[in-house]
Image (cartoon, rainbow, N blue to C red):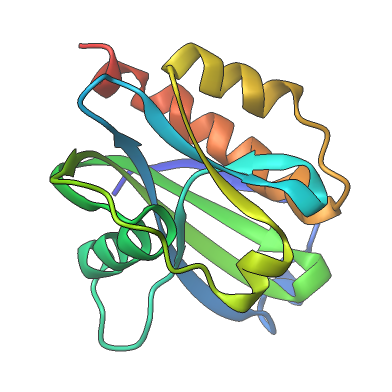
Amino acid sequence: MKVLLPLNPENATEEEVRDYKLREAARAIVMDDTSRIALLFVAKENYYKLPGGGIEPGEDRIEALRRECMEELGVEIKDIAEVGSIVEYRKIFKMKQTSYCHVAKVHGNAIPPSFTDEELENDFQINWMSFDDAMRALHECRPTSIEGRAYIVPRDIRFLEEAKRHLVS
């Protein structure tokens, strides 16, 4: 998968990164039958993000993507296509994370999501919006955490920029 961007806002050195734990994650730009895409609003920290999360042991990227969409959005997905990957050097967590992003369409009817305790504590909320409104929401939100401000929002803006050709065709 094409690497779109290295994110290293804290200027982690190659030496530091050698000791970082590695994490892989699957992210989704999910479109419903009215061409709206899903963003999660993290109310506690005032930012929007794409659905997705860590790839668990024994899962491949697509299995993780399907699981995360069911857990966070309550939807099954189809017509999955690659967008690209972003490597994040998160000095604050001593972690190198590679996020793999795909576009997909909703398949069937939604059920209530099954947010984790952490997601519930952070007051995750599902928002379906047009592509333009999603880009505006990401650009205008003001995250209160360095994680949201320096990593999550810039990463997801870049994924949406790259995916635009899939979504508006």
